[in-house]
Figure (cartoon, rainbow, N blue to C red):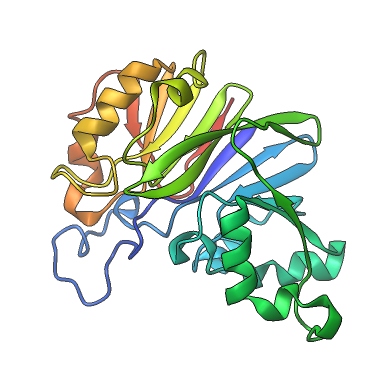
Length: 254
């Protein structure tokens, strides 16, 4: 299984529009972060977790030959706003499966009504096939079992996902011991680490490191990174062994 980080930034991305923060002015490509998403591939199958407002650019850069589905963590715009850009895949393949909590599906139907209204659908709009993701209900994607991991983003429920020995969790602030136990035996954990200062709805760096140590994956990569965390290369030097900052276009094999 191959995982490519399509974006590793927070909701504003890096650089932030109009910002003179030193990280936003950095010329290091690893300090330039699109909104969070990953492309997961095995055999001839390609799935993305989340499709934010940078989705078109991310697909052009990664250039997958197909898209078998989109898996959503939650409904915030930096994770969903690119849904319309599945159109090129729809035109070649037909309706694209999407997977999400029932609340997220309801939100998508409200915001992208022209996609979901098959009875009176605009001819150029893509079509989707909706699949409801439920807590404690693993589902199958082309031979891979996907285990939903339930967590909280402040008070909002979010799903992370485990596929084989890989798990992806973003925008989490709290997670129960029961859900954490579902992450035992991982080769790779990906989890959000927004900044050093505490935040009401995201792990800060200290919390992300502590969570990574509880999980005990062979390798942990941090994502959903704000410019306030600092320069990529400087932060990377401070991280514990086998713990890394992800960056856009990073590709790992599991």
